[in-house]
Length: 101
Image (cartoon, rainbow, N blue to C red; front, side):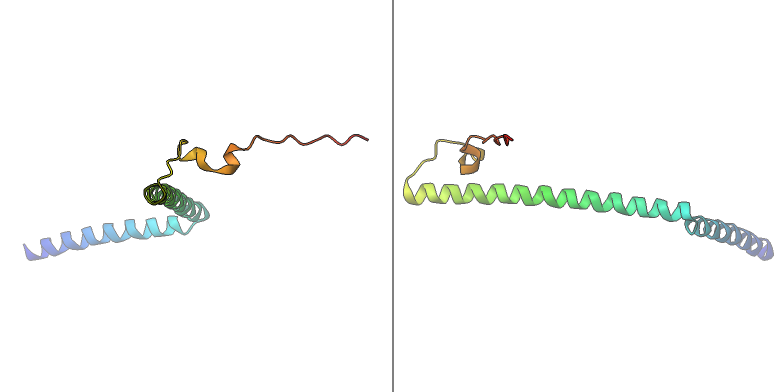
């Protein structure tokens, strides 16, 4: 009975190791490397996008805090929303003049 148990353990171990070796060999091929690289790039792009969203949210929150602080200390109440306070956003767009030759 002991020998049958150890035979089963050996067979299972052999199957697991052979599958692991086959998977490692597949990953070492150019297609496997490209797949791993593609996954890494997708993960990096997601992390950068998430970081950008968090930075924008933090900037907006800080801008609102500063706006409230200025309003509290000076008594000046801005009539425009957060996006309309920038001078560049209030200026009309200039059109480039065509060079007449």
